[in-house]
Image (cartoon, rainbow, N blue to C red; front, side, top):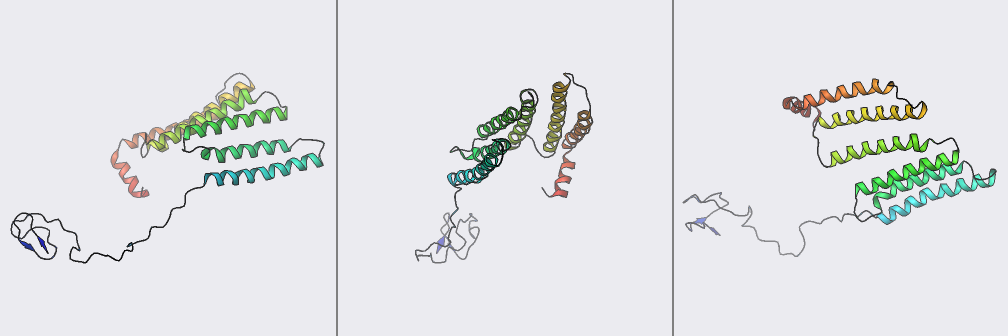
Length: 235
């Protein structure tokens, strides 16, 4: 039986406050029920399987090593030496690095494994250049474009993870970075081909991208529009 802590009156049922002095009553909902003394838990928690990083790395290693060995053997036995299989081996090595790098460390440190992935991509481009003997395009063309793409992807992921932008600012940032990427690619290509930048297709892509970004940023300042969009798209 429960009693009021203020006046001592006996309480019946599950009142929210004392009927005499109106002091709030703090009682469990079913205080009159007998406690469960069976010794068994009332519910069973299902075990959550932890992700096995070592197993994943071994699996990726087998998946990439098997076709690499097979293509190398076919190229060596049926051709006049090692030729086309090198490109496949380089690509499979790049796939291995991209799939395994996030799980090589105890903690998932995004900047670290993203830097490893970027370095692996640049190394892949240089290996392809050296194998194909098609000129010095990796350093002057491929590497700047790869670094620009890496910077843009890193900026997007870091900005979204740290929640530095909100709602309509997110697509606006995507449009802005898309415009920057298109302009950068045309600049690098023109400098590689003719050593001179001539604005062309990238400007036609960048102008609508920047226009959309400006519109979204203006709409973000109108909170009632943001609320309506959230209602329409249920986010």
